View 1 (spheres, helix red, strand yellow):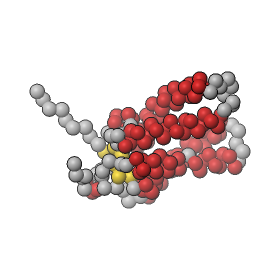
View 2 (spheres, rainbow, N blue to C red):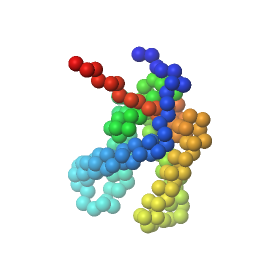
View 3 (cartoon, rainbow, N blue to C red):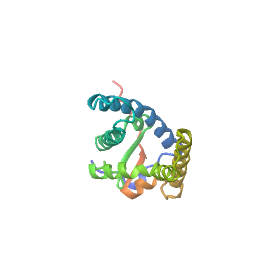
View 4 (cartoon, helix red, strand yellow):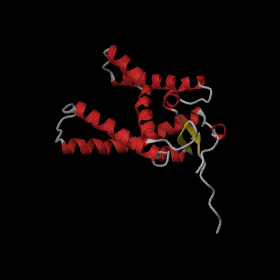
Length: 173
């Protein structure tokens, strides 16, 4: 299969990508709840703060496996399928595991500045930290408007792009 010309690949609108991200968050809630239950059962965790850093590391790996797996094998997570968005490399080909790992790690740029600011300011309020994360994520999303193809910065960094991917029409019998 030959890759389409990069000019033929259309970037989904920013509101569409943000809606997909919101839907992804809803789906990931269930994934992370099950992963957290598995971790706490296997480690016999009795208190939420007991083994907190181990749980965070475990969930980071689970998220990585989720995203990298879907991106490499099909180019779409469940939410991306629903919103007809696909991840491809800069030439329009499927992403490699190495490129998918790069994108997963770089995608934390959505949240890293806000988390560092919360840590430096020694913020304790969950509501304040959540607000800071929302503002930081929206600011990061708006930075895509500065890119010529309106891609996110972590996609530019990793040589990937999000494109519209309409399903093939079904053949009538």
